[in-house]
Length: 241
Ligand code: GLP
Image (spheres, rainbow, N blue to C red):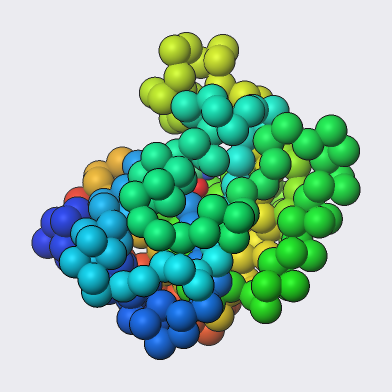
């Protein structure tokens, strides 16, 4: 894994956006793998800035998102569909019909996950995937466990993640207890992966990802097995490396 430590959150966000812009400018019909959470917001702001400055065009771009709460409706402000529209899609010229987020309202979850996975393949795979990292080392909603499900699936959230994500909801009780997420193998289909970490709260997770055992107990550590992963973090997240 390539590791880049930047002075600030603004610098790491700019670098991540530059990687995406370069790929889009090389391949106008590329497939982006996108993530939610606080961490990629700065990168999305840079992408919108670049779009407005005429440096990048999203007209032919397609995207697939990593995960979504379950159950949740797309108009719920905490849904990841809402997040993506708000932070990125509504601010540039991507065709919304070409943006995919797991269906938080699916009635047949197994079928919906299978279709989501097939769609990733039908799109020709992901050219570049951005990831955040959970404080417990989760990626997407692949939570630490003895074994991990490889493809898009429904999963129970850990108490740790429910607590971490409760900051976005009125109370911890309002956080959905399940989520739909791409699996580790779905993520590994991406030709290039950029993982972002910012702030001291992520320093332990970054240390475990890079320096600990490669284990499903720290899902992010599995990324060391992928041939093209770049970790971009700020100084605070790099405190223990
Ligand atoms: C969430 C998301 C992840 C995200 C992570 C970190 O639970 N499912 O995709 O990477 O937690 O979020 P944040 O960037 O807000 O710290």
